[in-house]
Amino acid sequence: MTLRASTGTITAPPSPPASSEGVRPGIGPLSAELLIVCLDPEEATSTLGSFLKANQIVFDAANAGPDSIVGRITTVMQPLSPQPLALPAELEVCSAALCTELQNMHRLKLVLTLGISAHIAVLGACGIPLSRLDFRPGEITHLPDGLLLADGCHFPTKPFPSDMLAQRRSALTELSPKIRAALRPTA
Picture (spheres, rainbow, N blue to C red):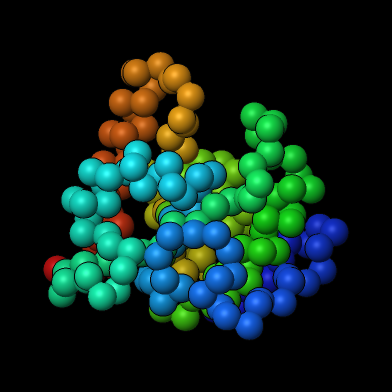
């Protein structure tokens, strides 16, 4: 996988710390094959509970069964911006840090982005211009280096219209078999 920071003001990703397991805040090992990129990893684990269970996604390789998918959830940015959407400069910094994390995930096969900010950060981390790949919730795209990118919608923590929340859950439920098939083609 040839990853690089986006072509904005960041020219190179920061050097990883001595212990690669502590590169960025997240839940799960860097040895995972699935990376979920979202705004708040801790909130995502509770919001996505049924999705994670249905797809046998675990965050501890020691607890993984033969059909389990070892995953990691990481944040788009830390600390979160008070803006409704991240500012371009913030996404540049996040892309550079995410680039380092992706480079340290040697078994990574698929990245699930939850929301447009996560999608933009991953594209930047992979050196893909935004104009080359639109955010397409419910779709899985093959990136040039072979990495798979699945787009899903962000699940907000603030009060949200129930019909819109139901649509987002439905879209993620429909994406579930595609993710499992991509990671376990023979299962």
